Image (cartoon, rainbow, N blue to C red; front, side):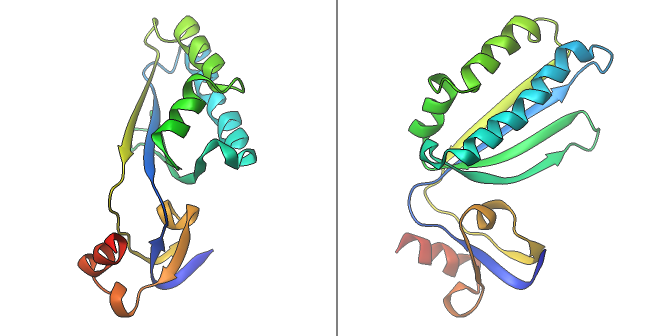
Length: 159
């Protein structure tokens, strides 16, 4: 659903942005890349069912222009929560990680990557858009008054 007008994201508390992606390097070796791609959806479903994990939500997902890569933008409460899910949560990720290295990594038919950002300050603007990004996982508020400019939105965050 499109939200008409201009709005910004209002988020309280710590924030971690986690970008994670997969890239198919060889379409013909589907036995190596398909399990990696299939492992993502159950993990995201599990995280939505367990808000105590620290997962705030998925801000969006995009297919690369060459149709080889998929990017997921995740928001987390802390790096500790993200690390706990990645390394010790017995429900999915550690086993998927081990399976990737056992079955897919050495052949090179599929690649994975991630980047983690601890956010000290943030600002966002959305115009005539559906909820996405930080506004999707926090609160979308209209842009007016002291929220008109990027500098005003950043100043409001630091107060």
